[in-house]
Length: 216
Image (tube, rainbow, N blue to C red; front, side, top):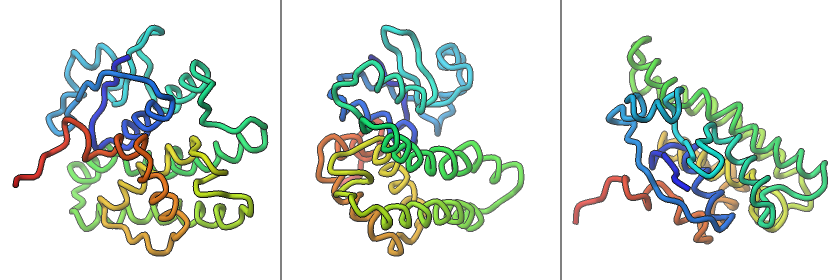
């Protein structure tokens, strides 16, 4: 498998976590969004949307991280990202959807680029925009986590699920946009628990081959 992705892309980040949790090897193919490589003809031949991630595999080229995650769950079910019973699966999917549907899409790079270059928003406005929607989603997530008496160290139960796969990249993004996370102690505790696992830490943006390297 080849994963076409960008180190800082949240949707790419969640795919790296999921592939690690499934114990799957893949080739890392960097697509530099800063250089607009996602808009070049070679990449658009793989994904006409010009978006990362894309996963090239025996079943062809898969696009859209929710669809790829569902494919991974169907194709490699022995290390599940979803609980067994329908009600629990729905709960985990709902936690993931708060991020995947209600936070990430409106804080995506192309939305922010439109705000900057078409609407003339400065970086203070961009920070406020991102913070508004991250707080709205995280407030709901924190309340749902607090209301779950059986929750373990992760979003649901005692092992990582699809909800954690979505949450951790969004926490990373929140920090990049300097969002105050102190009102969300349960989210921070989950982030800390995940950070102890190589499956998560090895997927972090700073650990990727195309991430900037600090000078010593």
